[in-house]
Image 1 (tube, rainbow, N blue to C red):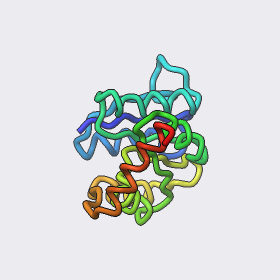
Image 2 (image 1 turned 180 degrees about the vertical axis):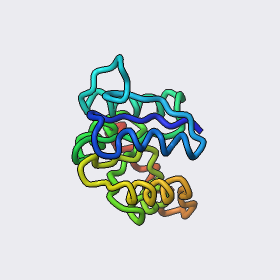
Image 3 (image 1 turned 60 degrees about the vertical axis):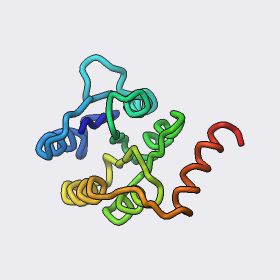
Image 4 (image 1 turned 90 degrees about the horizontal axis):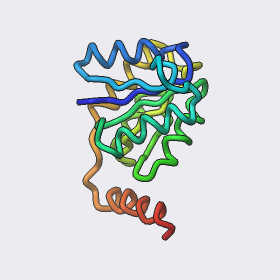
Length: 148
């Protein structure tokens, strides 16, 4: 699986994230501060990673900034993206299950190495719910994006 990764700084778990994804066998596309050729601001980097998902260059993305909030907002501006800011494994599992999240947002300030491992374990072992009510919520998000 190919994962697009964006960070606005090379602090906290930013570089560890790329190493950990490689250790798990994922190919990564890097954006922002993780790239030597791109603008590193969170809005640009996170949008680039989200576009990788929508345009088929990656199956999922992980976006990071100091709090994770800006990165998640920027990614969610890309139509079809469901980015979830996850500070723990339980939230990551729920985001995959109930929200069919396709972008994980992380805080570079508050995510520890141990939490990163737990969050990634939960994220990548999770699947979207097949419950009709859960699927109806996800379908409704597309209607909201189209202004309905």
